Image 1: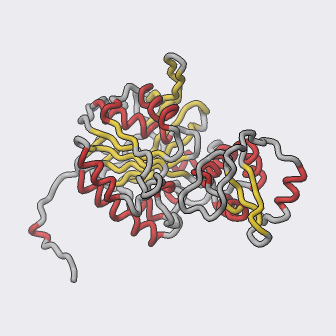
Image 2: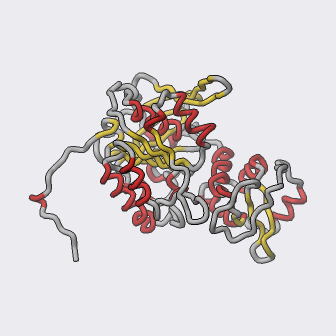
Length: 372
């Protein structure tokens, strides 16, 4: 059968805004950008404003106070997330951080394709959840191929319906690829279904004329006119023995177009930072990933094999031979492996990380590795 509603029976309602013209309640919003430019910082600043009922940048409009749920796969809770929230004077009592999903034998990574029901229960137990941050969304898509439109669209539907049900803004972080082709919106990594499902998408990029200045510009906005852009800089705050980065917004709007800024020669993000972030995400939770698989994925992101190898050494990533047919796999030592790992556990007594593997190691592994 079909679920049908007569148009005359529908009660028309205005769009409700968390941040007027920027973040709509009950909708999916995307923030994209290269590594290291402050995507997560922007999200935490927004979380702080919601948690304390603070004022939005430039307009100084007051936000209605509410609770915030944060899912963050890349930053440490104690030394990064909470420290950054405190640096921007968040009301920590109104912010909840999802650490993991509780499994039968042990905790596992939260999976948006399986655990929306758990998130719904958590939201009901909290008071007035107005913002849910997922950073990055690709880390919580389970086994879904984030480049397949149909799979992504199917996975997003229940998450978006949940956000609409509780009236919370679903703010998701993702990355940009480095290709110079197409408009800015087409450069968001993953399936086009992400940006198609989002009611608004924004990009965080570097100011070509000021390397310390960051820009937050509109990629698309289906619910309001394309708004002015915002500019900010990343600074630090210190207290006791803690140092935390935070952002400071400029007090005026900026009128720049994302396509123009991204297409300029000055906007060439350092491949090294992207390679390091890529490896940290792919090898999270002690996962052992075939190096051929990593090189192929890196190629899609336009990360050169040599740059990926340098990032491997810098991060202390190790490699091991799984078998004659399988070849080599990369892994991060001293990290707990996921529940469904197919390989033996990495010895926990390996305390020394070799950051400078010899030429012989490079030659041996490269003989098993295809860069194409």
